[in-house]
Length: 348
Ligand SMILES: [Ca+2]
Ligand SMILES: [Ca+2]
Ligand SMILES: [Ca+2]
Picture (cartoon, rainbow, N blue to C red):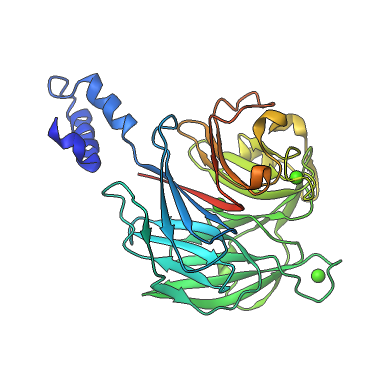
């Protein structure tokens, strides 16, 4: 079957077959081929060399890797926009967003040198995670705001992508320390760094001026020492929070918590109240290779958790399957990535 060489064609053919219920021309084998060839790319950033490493994780037992070599030397939060063939990361050497165009998934990714052609003003001090809603790119900056490291605070920089520019619309100052952020619909969830708390800012983008903003609601995730990264999968209503434990232990005190049926659990936990650890599933222990898991992505379809591990062995990308009962799991995939800082999973 020659069209197997073109992944998108195969998918379209299979979908058309299913729609027509044409079993004669669409065997079960074709459907299996479609699933096996699903495009799933994990985009990653790091603070070692600032390059974007991509991992084709469509088959977790046969992962292929390619590197987009950038001119920045350290980076965090990462995102991929398939409509624009655009990879975006938050540069920690220029302190602005950088977008690399022409990154198409129509053919397997190969290692290339890239130049940022979508850029913006370099407003930030310590950019971390990036959260995207349509053309709005929000960056969490964890630098101290008020000159007193003992008072928790941070800033959310709200950029709008217009043409090949990231234009700063406004800046929101928070009274929590920031790191991981993610949109769930119109609401922006944020970890309260250095704590075990999860905050939400409802209708976040409706705050159009530069101002300070209190979280709409904050809950405590029992069992976590210090959360850092988070991700949400709408298909399975699953929230995942990482736990870096002590930052000083980069080897074996980290983990992550899976919160299934997240919407109702969050709704039913009052502002300031605690979500019991018995309502969460914890993965941690010596087999997990997690010391400082700083970011997380989740494929709800396969139940696979991807982790950016900043500390263990200098930094790794990890994947875990069969997470339902938690515990001291051995990663199903493990690759070195020095000072790994962020992961973003793109599926099509
Ligand atoms: Ca402060
Ligand atoms: Ca740790
Ligand atoms: Ca991320």
